[in-house]
Length: 379
Image (cartoon, rainbow, N blue to C red; front, side, top):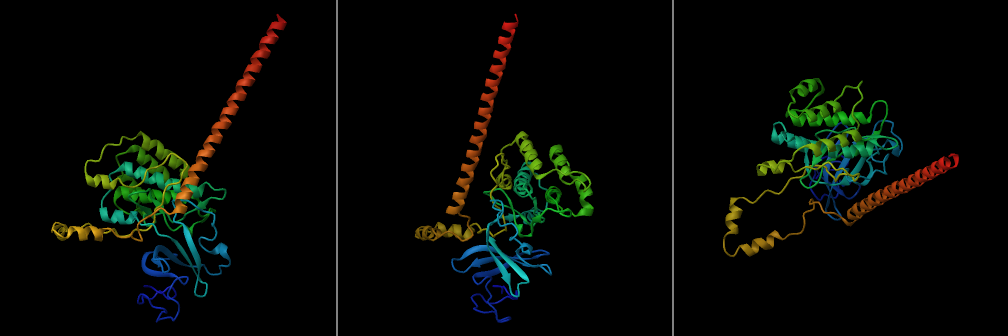
């Protein structure tokens, strides 16, 4: 495990850190198991809550010099944000002399786009999947950008977008987001998403000096290429918004044929999400977690030995792993509540439209009657 105070590697289960003498647990009850990501702001850890063994994602960030109050601390400025596309904040606090801030978010296993790019080491040929990916991320970003005070994520990249086989993708590191200003606007997130898609299309990470060369190497689907061009527009040109991007992807995706996969590998590559036409937010996505390996030849041979099949069946019935995603009652309640609100809002809009139509019919009938009466009296 890793000490939360001095970041030294220590023995698991130690009550105090041999190096600094402090409590090695983050916030008194989160054990830091290993580092999973590092950026200019701080470190992200896979952690375990000691009281129940729940897997979480912990993050420790250095506060800017002269920071005072909660408004300068990540995740404290936007406590009202609640969207299934972003991992939910569980707890936060300060470390040591309060010069560092820590947050704990729920753990959502998946695969980083960066890991997918490194594993494939080639261009992504499934343009339909790319459209689905763009639509899912655009829907999540629209939730931030369409607020009264637009919020900019500020860290959209291959290293923060995560996909899962059973849900659309998501974006981590929401704790670095801030309100839009002159230096950071929603267009910043759109361009960053464009660079990530360009990297998947070309098989190379898109750094700024190479963007034009990589764009020129992208061919094939004119619609997707044109959409990518709008996402990568230069600073002086109005860039497509997240809402416009979401709607454009829905139109493009609905017009594309969807042939059956020709191989199991192609079916696996099509696993990420679908851009939705409803206003319901896309499901979650976050850090990559290892997947249990398939049984090898030795295990398969042993399974055929008489007398072992019953033991194998008993051993296979185990309690759920901590990192297997399970929908908790509060999540189900939130999903049902969102569906109820969406249905109610739709019914209200339809009722208003019907009332307006009835009113128009009455007005038109009154006008016709008045005209007929006027014509009859004048003749």
